[in-house]
Length: 107
Length: 122
Image 1 (cartoon, rainbow over the protein chains, first blue to last red):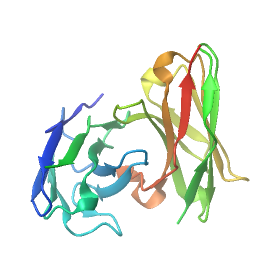
Image 2 (spheres, chains in turn blue, green):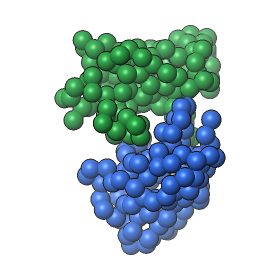
Image 3 (cartoon, each protein chain N blue to C red):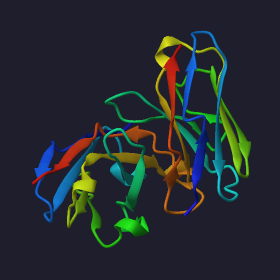
Image 4 (cartoon, rainbow over the protein chains, first blue to last red):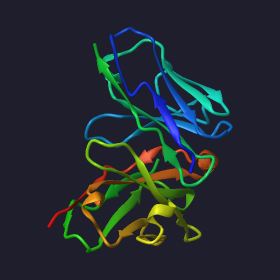
């Protein structure tokens, strides 16, 4: 199975900050990497697919980059609605696997 | 765009089975793959498997292969997840998610059901 490792596991930041979350795959996955946002008690929401493509309706302050084994999710200017948990997910091989999550909290 | 509605919460005994349904509306069911993902309390996301309803073909995460069965009824636009031999560790919220055929190559789960809570308790 492909292991996905996110860092940091948790992060405190302020409204307006620029934030970067990293995801590393245990083997190359090309660009088969998606990012999700999850708020407490809610289902995950797709933000970025194919490593860099913004899902329709997602604000442009979210961006993704990377290929191979190393990927990043960047939020250019944090808004109150962005405080949530973020997961990366690889679709290169089955089983599809997720990172352990990064909890983004208000400082 | 398709919307997904899941069946209600379940409380089950250890060793029993649970069947969760996921009904699609507002879209063409056959245009999607349906994946199932679970989340134990306070934990991360774990993929169980997926089914292509139009073909009836499913594949599973190996760790669940012996206990999970996915099915789909094209006529009603409903997918099902059946999990047997339940243990306390199966207590979780179970989500179905729709993956459009156009982006199935990247398995983009872009529509999710609200989740079904399954509690295994003696």
